[in-house]
Length: 405
Image (cartoon, rainbow, N blue to C red; front, side, top):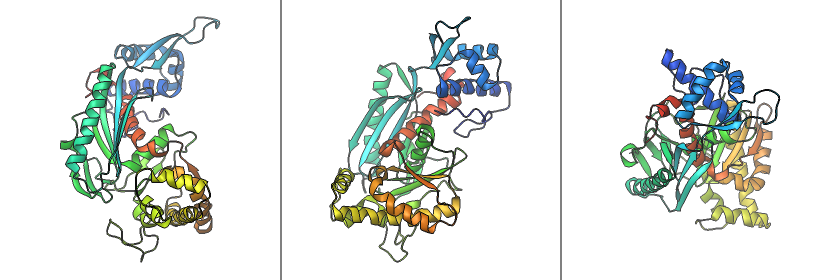
């Protein structure tokens, strides 16, 4: 995890911390946690040097975090060195865990991630949620969350909150899915239908995928456009290490950018949207294959074997994706485009035509296109890690016993 040491007055979630003595203490506890999480194991002296506090001040903060079960003392930092070695500090693998959940069109998933960023439990259920009643979907998801939370508590871990990724528009700072065309949902308030773990967050799956890439991706810049695809296609823009959400929270609907305005109708109500050319169902149709579970693996396998029809379908999808991305790149000028989700598995056959379109249509210098190593796991991991980072951002809540569910 990258420690945002330049952000002294805001946590990574964006919440402003008060300019009071208590607020300063909360910020400093957060800075210690982020420093150790990003670079640990570290000695107190090293932490003090990194965040610009005295060793005495850091020691006081560290003792509080150790008592709260958020940091562990591992012993001498460097055995055998000249002088008295400092005691190495590491983020605890006990205590709080972030619970992430994902509602996909064809699956439900839940995982628990500890403060070290390690997945402690995970469960996935393959189930079609297309036009399934939201109450039934969320009842099943809630049961999965409660089972996994119970397992975490039995292992001595404490759920610190729940974040849910959904393939649809979520009103900013709310729990309401305004529209999820591939689920068939409209104006669904998830709050009353989910377990009462606090804090509770609901966000678009592409946003969580982008955050996962920012926090966990190797060498990912702080300015990039993240594109993810399963049944639909979503995108999220990260600028200076923060999501660009838009006025209502709806930024990033790349899948519904028109590629051919007179093209086929789309569930969103438009025509010729990118999803009608590069979404999973569209690629399967173009390849002459039926929709169904595991079809992305089938596409990748047949493409690798040289299936001409599948490769032609993927080239067409890459072309459509390149056209849509050209508009976004020309408008937003990101440092990089990152392909995630199912696109990451199909990248070898999408990239040539995608990059050709970008090179030929971009007004300035075409940005680089990379493939996420997180693949389809990005949204689920991003959701769980967002809860973890809320603990790192304000460990005082955990110290006071108010951060868990």
